[in-house]
Length: 131
Image 1 (cartoon, rainbow, N blue to C red):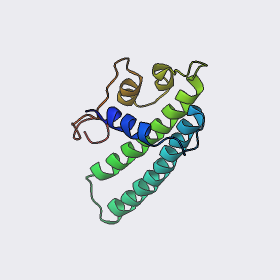
Image 2 (cartoon, rainbow, N blue to C red):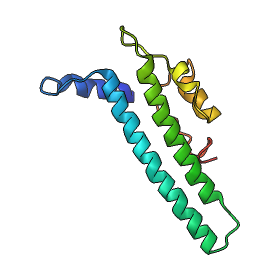
Image 3 (cartoon, rainbow, N blue to C red):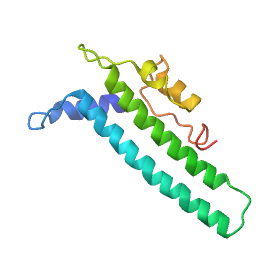
Image 4 (tube, rainbow, N blue to C red):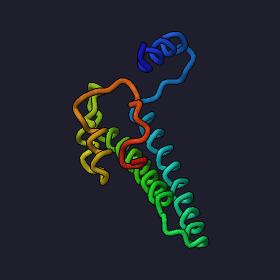
């Protein structure tokens, strides 16, 4: 059973009493949350920079990873906002258009790719952020 099927089953069981909003509003909420996380990551990035400067460490990998995390969250927020802007009257959206303006090429490819993946990749050590 995929994550999507599990969520769909749970949704079918308990939707009668829940308020409904336009899909675009839900996406904007997610974009705003990603933007808040991006801002928190920026604070973390600054803190790591201060610590590295204080201890004169030349290995800035932690700082680079924090900055990439911030950029990834920022890109996710921009992507979600872009999806909202591409929703048509049929309720479909255009991920490739929403991803086209992203600055991180790998993130743009992952989010805008025409292939659809229903599972989270099991590779947590690869990619721009953790590479």
